[in-house]
Image 1 (tube, rainbow, N blue to C red):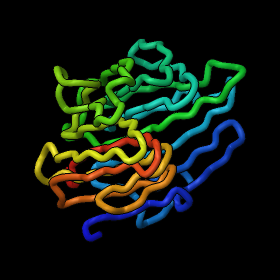
Image 2 (tube, helix red, strand yellow):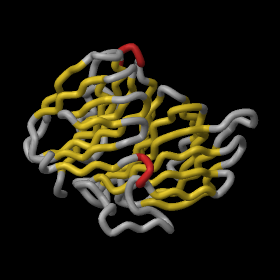
Image 3 (cartoon, rainbow, N blue to C red):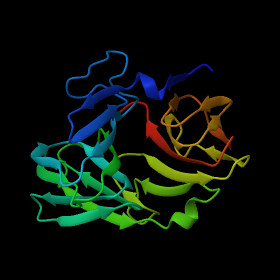
Length: 238
């Protein structure tokens, strides 16, 4: 398929610190791959497993849109804006780091691990006032549908960020297929398959495989088994 790039699960960077087992779709920390620095404005997609009672100490960010999607367990959050919250499986959290924030994240449970995606997008506007948002998703909307969980619009479904991006979470039954049209001309798609097997425009993706596609107006996604996946529509240039 032209105008596409495939990132198989086993080609990701991996850093296992014991308390944290992290898989990196794009260059991050000590893992650097010159061909895997970013996809459009998508800079980071980390697939993290955090051990019980462990986490990240207070650290800074600026001029980045940070999206956290828990997949299993809980994540406790504190930041320099005064927010203290626990993000649970089925929630989505965003932070616009803007002019600068500091935050910490840890697994508050002492009897189970936490699994999550953390995603960073470059913002379309720099040095905005930092902001925080967290919502609980209606998982029933994800069944055989593209449930929008993020957009550029505060009054739209899901959370919002300072970027012309739209994210969808889906839970397809085996043999179900559905098409998704691009929202903004010039945007591309990055699809991360969470569980099961899907075909995206004919390309098979197994668990944690990802596919980036650009210069296309529509995706056709078919589930070869019961499957869960994340679709990100993002600008290819900022």
